[in-house]
Structures are given as structure tokens and as C-alpha cells.
Amino acid sequence: MTITRRHLIASAGAIALPALTLGQAQAAAEFSFKYGNNLPVAHPMNARAAEMAAAINAESKGRIDFQVFPNNQLGNDTDMLSQVRSGALDFFTLSPLILGTLVPAAQVSGVGFAFKDYGQVWAAMDGDLGAHVRKQIAASSSLFAFEKIWDNGYRQITTGTKPIATPDDLKGLKIRIPPSPFWVSMFKAFESSPLTINFAEVYSALQTKVADAQENPLAIIATAKLNEVQKFCSVTNHMWDGFWFLGNKKSFDRLPQDLKDIVSRNINAAGLKERDDVKKLNDGLIADLKAKGMTFNTTDAELFRNKLRAAGFYAEWHKKFGEEAWGLLEKYTGKLV
Image 1 (cartoon, helix red, strand yellow):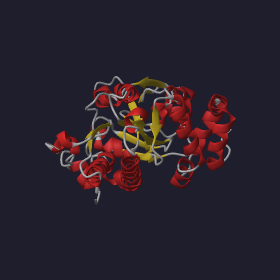
Image 2 (cartoon, helix red, strand yellow):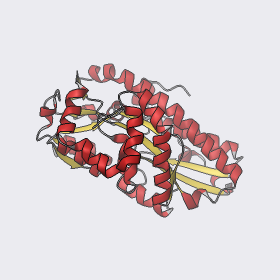
Image 3 (cartoon, helix red, strand yellow):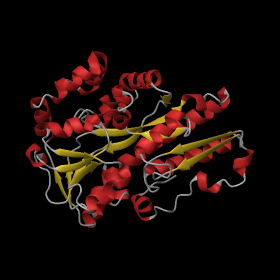
Image 4 (cartoon, helix red, strand yellow):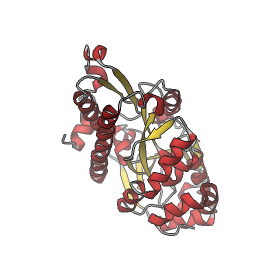
């Protein structure tokens, strides 16, 4: 499947998802699975999810009916997390930072200004740090995570009234963040006024000036059309964010091993393809968004890192995560404190 920016942004309704197209095949399946996410249909996650679901259904020879529900069709992040924990939903992709409300250790991959590039990210998440987090997820919840975390990208800050050039520009800013204490902690360290709002309400919150700013990777800024309600985009790369592909343990364990292997292999393979898609999309989106009227500026990460050090942010979270998790993070990023 070839993913292009033009296809993703201009053809949001063009991706046919298995949940909408299986028809009579659903009745014949031995195992039916629902997978939900919060992203627009045009996002690479849903392009690859559609491809993945079709492959699972075909390779299982109709024994599995794997359905995809994008764009908050099954509720917001909080709703779907509750559903997948109870087994009402079988699979769900969620940011480690939001998962941190349930599994605190999951947030360690989102430490502000920690990962300097994708080389560090994938070494850590496919290596010892990712293995540690998956172990914590399995031990502390009814969930488990597949081996390959999907990409969301480095997060950038958009605003309606002024660009963010230095940490001082964040003082007092009403910035929308996802519902996660970790995000609250970081933006309070910058002396902002963070507002926790679910993604489904972000566009309207910016449109009505409930929030002045928000932060997300460029792929989400573009596919959710946030450029329509935000003038400036500051390339801060302040956090790397991904999506753990989560499953309900009891639901997945219904499958015999051969079908588990089919599901796992296709989910992990789709995750690797989605990583490439998101990086390529993010790399090219600045020009697209500039053409639509957005103004961009770059920033010096060290200024923001020094502000977090001075505010005690790194020291606080080092203590909260503990020596093992923090040590595994710094194994890949170098010393942060």
C-alpha cells in the first residue's frame, strides 16, 4: 500500500475499513474482534489497520472477523480504555502517556525532550525499555501490549496568537493536553495553564477559544485540520509519542495458537509499516501546512530541557518511575538529570 500526503489529507473518506465492508462474512466467523482508535480515517494508522484487518481475516480463512472502528466511533480515549479493560472492546491503540493513568510506568517513553532522534526511540522501544513497559502493562492490568509500538511522532505546539520560541512563551498559555497527569506536570513546569481535553473535543475547544493552544504531531495536526483553528506551529519536538497496540488478555486467549500467531504477526508488521508512513508524512507536512497559511518556527531544545531541569521535573519523575525504569530510559537517551 502506497501512502501519500495527498491521499491521506484529501481523501479522508476513501479508506474502506473491514468493519463496514464484511457483510455476510461476519456471521460465519468463529471469532469476532473489535479494534477501536481515536484517529481520523485519513491517518496512516487507519490505512494500515484496514490492510492489517483484511490480511488477518484472509489468512484465518474466515475464522476471524477483525473489525476496525476509527475516529472515536466507540467513544473517546477514556471510554475505549474502560471498554478494552472490561473486554467489551478487544483491541485499542493508546498513547503511553494516557495509558499512564492505569500503568504509571508506561509514561516513561514520553519524558519531555528526552529522545533526540528516532534512532534512540526505536532502539529503546524495541529494546529493554519497551520490554520493561510491556511487562508492567501485563502485570498491572487486564491488558497486554503487542511487541511493536506504533508511531505517533514527535509532538509540536500550535497556537492561535503567537509562536513559541522560548520557554518564557509558554507562561500562562491555555494549552490543551491529553488527560494525563504526566502532561500536566510538564506544562506546569513551564508555568503554562494546561487544560485536559479529550481529542474528540480539541477542534471545538480551539475554535471557541476555550484553549489558546494545543500540542500534537504534524500528522494529527493535518488530518484533524487543526490548521483551520490555529495560526502558528512551533517545531519543539518536545515529546516523542507512540501508540501501544493493546489487547484484552481474556479475549485474545480465546484464540488457538495458530490464530494468535496470525493476529500478532499482522499487527506487528502493520505497526512497522505505520512507523515509516508517519515519519514520511510528518517530514513532508510543513510545506503542506505552510501552503494552507500556517506559520512555522524552530526552537532550541536545550533551552526547554534546562527549564525542566531547573523546575525539578526530571528529578521528580526519576523518583516516581524508580531506578530501573529511569535507568533504562537513560541507557538510550543519555543522562537527563
